[in-house]
Length: 178
Image 1: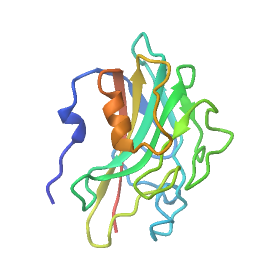
Image 2: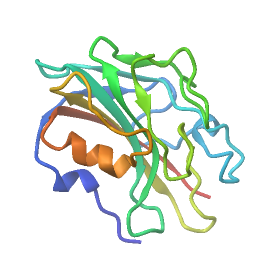
Image 3: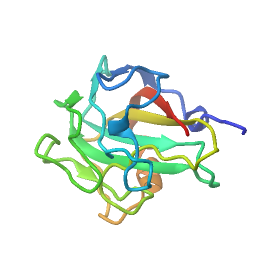
Image 4: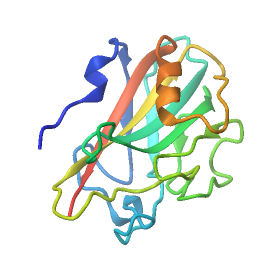
């Protein structure tokens, strides 16, 4: 399998730190972050995430989770949210689940439908025998307070809106395979 890094094609921006109490960068995702909806026996729960060191001028954040190794020509978006207030620098584990946005997720933030068709988090679920996939959790520090997107917008359209407004990017990657 040929792997690529979709972020290599984007303009370089400031880097900042993203960590998780749920898993370490490069580690296998725990069952809580594995897909139940897609039949992998997991819980479809967003991991705990903490970020720090964002560049000056941040007015909001966006958060995405993308699998570039999915057997499609476009990867698979597991999660996409935007309009996360600049004051928020941490999300607790399970703040977003399969099709549920809990009170632990910022009220001002918006969650888009993922490639599983639900406005929530779909956990890791590569096809059996397809090997390990990478799940890139990325926090985008934005120069705008809010993005105006229709509730039916795709994560790819969010990515287009991030182009030109992203001041910095932080990433942590987990893996999972059968």
